Image 1 (cartoon, rainbow, N blue to C red):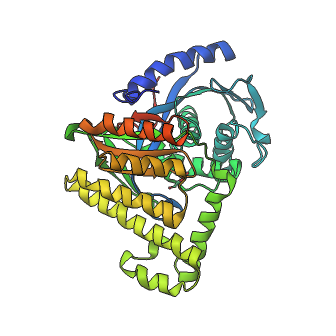
Image 2 (cartoon, rainbow, N blue to C red; image 1 turned 90 degrees about the horizontal axis):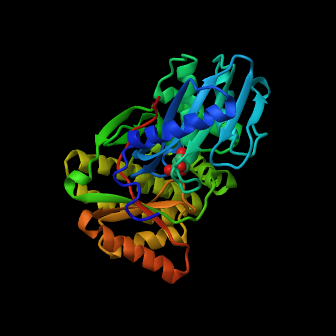
Amino acid sequence: MTKSQGQGMSGSTAGETAAGAVGGRFRELYGAEPQGVWAAPGRVNLIGEHTDYNDGFVMPFALPHTAVAAVSRRDDGVLRLHSADVAAPVVEVAVDSLTPGTDKNWTAYPAGVVWALREAGHAVSGADIHLASAVPAGAGLSSSAALEVVVALALNDLYALGLDGRQLALLCQRAENVYVGAPVGIMDQTASACCESGHALFLDTRDLSQRQIPFDLAAEGMRLLVVDTRVKHSHSEGEYGKRRAGCEKGAALLGVDALRDVPHADLDAALERLGDEEEVRRLVRHVVTEDARVDRVVTLLEAGDTRAIGPVLTAGHASLRDDFRVSCPELDLVVDTAVAAGALGARMTGGGFGGSAIVLAEETDVDAVTEAVENAFAAAGFKTPRVFGAVPSAGARRVR
Ligand code: GLA
């Protein structure tokens, strides 16, 4: 991918182009027009990492890249699934046979959503689904959440369930936690379901209250780059769950419901109380300082001081690298190189252990920063990273 790809591509245009192709393929596969076509985006997280399962604060925005689904409902208890991105025939399964933990393929995401809806008491009696996603998989950009949310929104419309974005996000999270078996928080699904074009989503993950924060970098002469290191990551592989368990241990030792309840002003006292629990101390320090960084970024953006968020992003990366320990050499190289080449700030985004970093730069520095990162990767013998500009785009919607 070239550095400018993705930039300037509006969510709705991309969604509508894909809708035609996805609808045509649906017809070939299932012999009829789909009853509708829906799109749900991937996301980057601007700030607030590994805070969502601590009841804390996050600030993602939606990417222009979406998962698109052509869907028709069925009333005979049969679920048929097909993906343009996987070389495999249509998978057919009875909705009343769906069982958590049994499916290790991509189909677990859409099937998990059907399972979660039915388990919550919604009479979903089957569907024909064809999916195609432009969200890079395994890149920390929430390709899984996009798949879940697009299916949930389609079924919500086709079965007239009347669920809102928050409720759909919670059901998708349940699908991923229980059906797929990945212990993720609520950020990615909420971002995909609730983000708005031109805004970052300030989300309190305790009660899911939200505020749309205007985030128009182009108008201020800046750009946000996404650098996909192409180091694959997976949340079901254990390290994510270990961090989550460590945070829960910290909350228990401190006698609070969640680490969100430790005020930043009390951090030193809290660390003192954790004594020689060094591992837990580091996790607690990251979460409490990260919540404070989200607060700081919201304050700066609302004051119109956008450039000043750069160092806050970079400080967040240092905390994820040194305290939370979820970075990797490739992500560190993006951050160090970008900042040295003049970027305003940079950090890993998403769960970590690979995936993507974000870089905030002046428009006039974008080429130099991109070149510096590409050269540094070549010199280190790493895979060529994919770099693209990201504009805050629309959340999940019906496109046809
Ligand atoms: C992944 C999870 C999210 C969140 C981030 C880290 O993206 O799906 O719930 O925990 O990691 O901030």
